[in-house]
Image 1: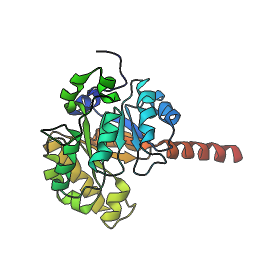
Image 2 (image 1 turned 135 degrees about the horizontal axis):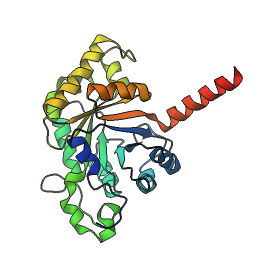
Image 3 (image 1 turned 30 degrees about the horizontal axis):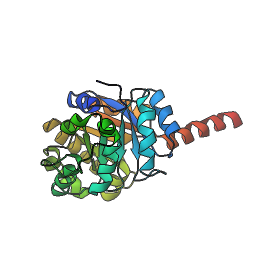
Amino acid sequence: MNRSPLDHGRLRARLGAGEATLGTFVGLASPVSAEVCAASGADWVLLDLEHGAGGEEQVRTTVPAAAAYGVPTVVRVESVARIRIGRVLDLGVAGVMLPRLDTAAEVQEAVRHLRYPPAGDRGVATYNRACRFGLDAEALDREGEILGVIQIESASALNEVEAIAALDGVDVLFVGPRDLSHDLGVPGEFGAPVYRDALERVRKAAADHGKACGLLVPDGAAAAAKRAEGWAFIGIGSDSTLLAAALSEALSVARA
C-alpha cells in the first residue's frame, strides 16, 4: 500500500478486537495542537467540530499532522446532516462521532451517511484525500474502514441503547458525561446512582453486542479506572483543558 495519511481501518480493527485505546479531544483549531497530542503518544485524536474553536477547514490539516506520528483522526461533526458527514469523510478521517441522537431510528438513518450506495447515501467522488485524489478508486470498496462512534448523551438515547448497539455501522457507544448527567437530572454529579447505573447500562449494551464503549474522563487516573472496567475508547480531556490544568498547576507551585 502506498504511503498515506489514512488509517485504513486500523483503529476500527483494534477496537473490534477488544483493544483499549486512549485519545484526547482537540478543540483549539490548531493542527500544531493536534500534532502535539499525537506526538505525546495518543492512540487517536478527536477533532471536535461541535464545541471546538474551528470548523471543517481544520480537518484538512489535522489529519496529516496527526498521521505523521501514525495517529488517526476521528471527527465529531457539528450535526449529523449528510453533507457534514460526507465532507469530513472525503478529507480522510478514520471515524466520525455523531452527537445528539436520541433513538435507534435516528442512529440508523445517520450511519447511512457513512456508506456509499446502495448500503448508504454518502456522495461518491474520487478527487479527494479519501481516494488519494483519484489515484485509489478502490477506496470506494473499503468503506467498512470507517469507525462509527455514537454518543449516548440523553435519557432518550439511554432508553434505546440496546437497540442502538445492535445496529450495523455502530462501532462505539460513547457517553458524554456532562450531557448525560444533565439530562438525567444530576448535572455534573458523576457519583449519583442514576448516572452510575446509566454508565453500566451503556457498558453492558456494548459488550452484549460486540461493540466498544467509550467516554470522556479528566485525567490518566480516571482513564486507568475505566480501562479496568472494560471501557475501550477513552478520551482524556482536551488540548485546551490539559494545557489550562498544567499551566494552572505550574503557576500555583511557582507562587506558593
